Image (cartoon, rainbow, N blue to C red):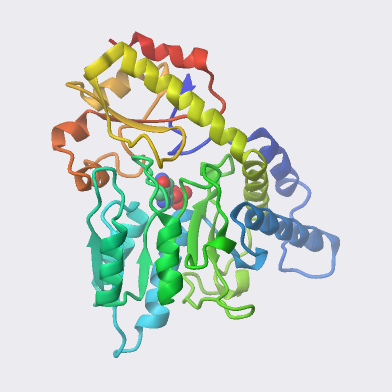
Length: 377
Ligand code: PMP
């Protein structure tokens, strides 16, 4: 079966699995314990993983906070800033985001509305991108306590102008968070050059790592001063007090290895995914002509993610029919029961939403396998 739903999750990389296994068997120490070898080994393994993640993102290792995944990182950052800075009655409780964010961002903002936060959900364009001009205006008008705009969209693949947004927030000093879950390992990231990006989220299982682990990047404002936020989980004070709980060493080690591989193979993977994407889109274009319509933009996008419509074909029926041969998705795996809020925000009609299919390639597939799609008539 051809697996083409890599935005939902990826197959664990064999080297990642090998790196994790000792930490599920003999290396079971708690990194918060002291002196004896098992504990020291666990501590060293976590510390190496932190370096590997930092290397991939171009930040400092002590800015990496391990979490259970991007959902937790997004919740922790948004609620954490809201709680830490929003407790005073005299503060401005405005926050800014977009209508195309992942549910773990949108739903968290919806929750904050119950506590008197005013959330501005900005419209997006036909490719689900934000308009930098509208961000600048909202920032001048409202001085939002926090702005959260995703780097790359999980349904359409469009990239937002993060470098430009970073400059805006570097200038005004307001908190800016980006959900980078879908772009890690797919676009070069150098946080040391993006001074305005103060907070970032990612998940391990989107880059060949295990499920149940991710990171929140919390940048230092100066050498020592970290961005402050209230933790989601209180307890033993692990992860610099940002995230209590005994560290899942095997998962963290797996995320570290996945980050190392993503870093090492970044440009090779980008090229391969772009080549495969072109091969597949050419098949659709030559074979189906105007019976297909592409939702994704051709440029400034996540390599290997294609969102397209098969005109007049119900996506659920098509996916079901294809399911013995190929795994695809009708949108995102997170909201499959509801019509996509992203496609709706892009201005697509219900009919267009119902004929949309998302294909996300990986470097594990080859051109011969993609020939399967010539069968679609
Ligand atoms: N943000 C984005 C953009 C995503 O695509 C996802 C996963 N679909 C998440 C956040 C949540 O990641 P996780 O389910 O691993 O917590």
